[in-house]
Amino acid sequence: MPRCPNLLNVTDTIDLTATVAAYVAGEQAGQIPENVAVRAKLHILDALGAIVSGTLLKPGRLIVDFVRKQGGAAEATVIASKLRTNRVNAALANGTLAHADETDDTHFPTQTHPGSITLPAALAIGEPQHCSGKEFIAAVVLGYDILCRVCRTFDRKWMQDRCLNPGSICGGFGAAATASRLLKLPVSQVRYALAFAGTQASGLTTWRQDPEHIDKALCHSGLPARDGVTSALWAQAGMTATDDIFAGPENFLRPFAQQGNTTELTRDLGSRYEVMETGIKIYPGGQPMQATLTGYFKLVQENGLTAKNIRKITVRLPESQSRTINDRHMPDINCQYLLAVAMLDGKIDFHSAHDFQRMQDPEVLELKKRVEIIADPELTRRHPAIRSAIVEIAAFDGRLLRTLVDRLPGAPYNPLSAQEVEEKFLSLSAPVLGESRAQSVARICLDLEDLTDITSLTDLLS
Image 1 (cartoon, rainbow, N blue to C red):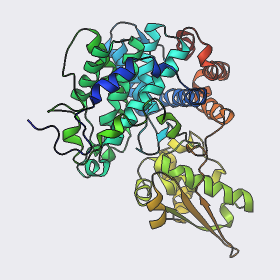
Image 2 (cartoon, rainbow, N blue to C red; image 1 turned 30 degrees about the vertical axis):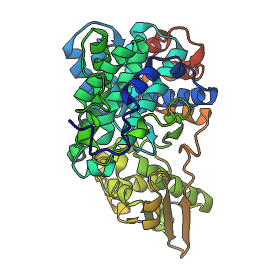
Image 3 (cartoon, helix red, strand yellow; image 1 turned 90 degrees about the horizontal axis):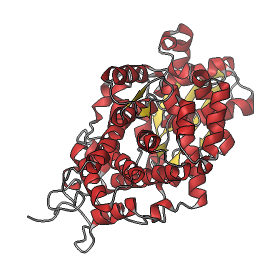
Image 4 (cartoon, rainbow, N blue to C red; image 1 turned 135 degrees about the horizontal axis):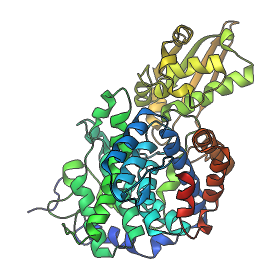
């Protein structure tokens, strides 16, 4: 049988699966450069904030209730609850919580959400393993690397045209890598864990039709986290599969990558880290809203504007982003709604970004009429490497104000400071955990490499 005739750059002299598996199990993946570890700690803290705040939302409440009813061994903590469950269900619950809305991080090149998949996998395995903070950081960084590299091999437009969701399909590989490392699986079992991640790979874009974000939370994060942890545990239990999931005659990439590029799997592995190309959001809303709100508040603050002064707001975005946030049912990705609230309140917070009832407020509905969204060809050309927006405000006094946001705060090329990430975490978690406990979690995360047992962190999060 021919080897992947529909893939580009397949090299028979390189065993791709062996290379990836050896890296997952080897010493090099544990030797994280200091700047990468520093960035990873911020993403861990950010993902924990997304999980904690997710307990306040419908997808989070439902998944915690579901997992509670399943029973099982009390192996791992479901964050911000009194529940401990088995490792597989803990990964499912915490993964779903992490993407219960749009506050989690985004890998710019692949438009995936690696933090909401790899961190739940690390928590599910790291807690019962009593791993150290240093081991935990390395496993999370590894999950980002494998998840994003698998996604880079895809022809993502080809997939999306066929209703396939690349992020969820590749997510199980990242979670499997994270779990395999913390379980200290040998190379042979890592190969099987990766194979089982391929066996379970799934994900459709039909979540776009669910107005309550539940299917999206499961598809993007809950299911890939669960599947990756399951894959590693199956391999540890002695179950076997193909040892060449990436390049065998019948392999994972073949149905998902008609024009895929397998060299992306191992390119710069161990020297270039995908967490460094991942952005952290400022506002509790979808990624396309970040540059929009940044530009709006910049113009308002610089020019002393209020809702009474604003006649019209025009937002220019990349084409795909303009569709994503155009008057959507969910408030946290509805551009017209969020800008109306910003005009009324002078800010956007977690509560207002998730207030379905307020979307019907007459005052909000009236202000929404002042917002126009336009797909901009030049911004489209630069997307997704540059997440930008042009915001224009026409004032009643005749002024026309305009700003281009192309150095988005929180983007990989303009990262947030530790203080900014901590402030975001506290704003999301303090209402659930309490101010004192939330501050303790933040302090531990920022010095995570000094922790001898990760349970010191998970105990605070229960």
